[in-house]
Image 1 (cartoon, helix red, strand yellow):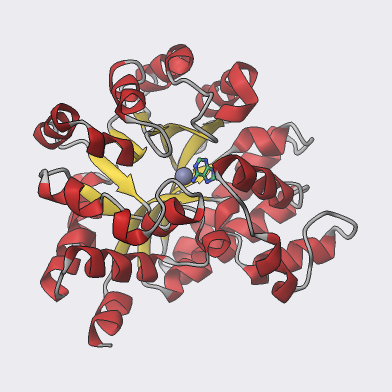
Image 2 (spheres, protein in one colour):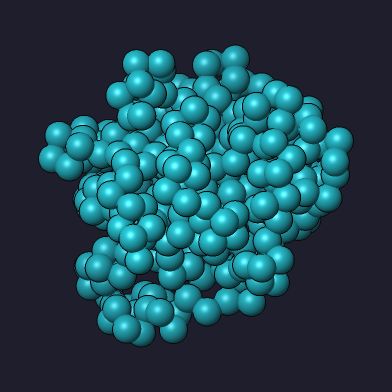
Length: 329
Ligand code: ADE
Ligand code: ZN
């Protein structure tokens, strides 16, 4: 329809999308061909069958199968550069890409080579495709505090910290991974000038979002849909313009919500919360950012102006400086 064409043509910013989780079948096949004998099928058609999961924890397990395909700095470069190509095709002009450097360094990729690979891919992609990338380095919550310590070190050490790094996050399953123990690492990241963007309230309730705000100094919340159950929390988010990074299709895919119709997106918007629309791990969830905007338009009953408003929310909630924001709207 016309609205789909409008969405496809709209310049967009994406604030919640994972690096490895953006590996399209084309990219995964290329990596799987480089590293035969791994769990992930190299055949793009078999790949769709591989990504069938029962909940967020099961998804993370399969996700780690793709992480296992990334073994050299050249793999990291290929992944990053090709993601930017896929984004440019959708008119995604700016993305804060969530990168989990711990997954790569603990597999033996040299930390300096890793940073050089993502930074070279970032500057090449900006020159070649016009896609501006920034990094959120995230702690894989399932790996616990040793991974938090290592992620903080990689993010904050002079000589390692990449120029494109703007924020610090926490992902992985949220059931059984309370947020407060991660406070010391977020304190350090914030003191060093990084923005705090933990996942919270993805498959659990509002308490996790309060914890992210109070303990981790969250400036935006990854997902945060659990906030819909707490009117005081919704009012707090709205008043302080703390954006939620909502990923509707992801929430159905991981069974965080049963159906799109039951998704709390409209409730969040109606409460005055600054809502942004994102794709999370798009190929793994069979979606892309354009499709997420189309889903949001349907759930919210939006016309072109309304959709453009969602795109502006992402620019407002981004960590671009004012000149960068002005260039995007
Ligand atoms: N890592 C990749 N995708 C994720 C998600 N949706 N939630 C938590 N951790 C993730
Ligand atoms: Zn996520």
